[in-house]
Length: 453
Image (cartoon, rainbow, N blue to C red; front, side):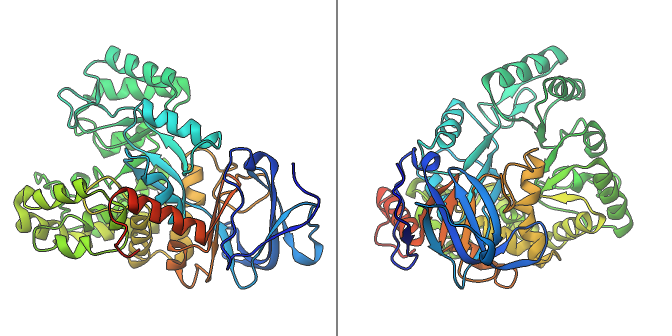
């Protein structure tokens, strides 16, 4: 039960509300005297209050008109900014220690792109308040041709195979179908048709046998990693190497970008995963970056051992040499009004949980998005992409209480979102001291307790 006495929560002291599952159901918390960036516009609402009841935002309004409910906990937001939590829309998470790390970096939602029953369990535990972590949307196993690119994928070579796979993943409870590179055309068409009948989205790659224009026509919801754009924009007869984009013809790009915008397809470019495709000469500099404290030694050892794969520094130089072309594609898509979401492809080499999403936000600004537009890719656009625009992604009454309390205006200092003063996830409040304790606990689990945050 909530006590009648008003409870004041001091950010500086790092006091935290209980993390029991019942908290989100029972408590009322009010952020007072805070500047609110709702993400509905660039306007910052000065000296506002936000009332959170249970897992939902109950009201948002000016302080001079705000009624603080009896028994509410209060977080003094004087000199701070409040914005929606961020979504990393392309992750591969397989270790439970990663989930609190995402939260500590302000990632309150993730879209998991290769799922298993484990992820269904985590998703439901987070939703019930039994596990600390971001809200999870998850695919099932990747759906590919035979042989698949990745072991553990589901395969579909015929229309009947495709129908069976979609029915099975829908029945299992996965949130969307992820398609991949080797699907035959007929199987792909059957996947899209069956998924549409069942009301489950299709997201993922552009199968080589299908091509970009057909994927756009089919209504696939997302395209990952700018997949298919390299081939669509390459000179006739040229087949680019993976990750290596051709020199872009501006006229061709304008045409393809307009087609993407007209189709309503979201792109999750994951520019940061290409940034991390470095050879032996570049790997140590990447390993020295923040966030590696929360990556297992086994992963780091594996990355070092495989740094020479794909041709080592020669291939890495080719990938990095085509960065300007990839950037041009994202800029062209944005200019055409095509929709973009924030994603990292976390789980791949040299990416850090949570931290890499902020590297990607910086990438978006570098290619021409404003800080507001970049932040929308991980808030409003992420929610709309998942068909949950009235569930998360904004600071508004009725939405899930996924919030970041920041020490600076993120429109002027976007990196403030990478070290929030506090994070609220589904109504559960984690002040900075609690976030740092969670990070230290993860580091200790991994044997990295002596490393700096």
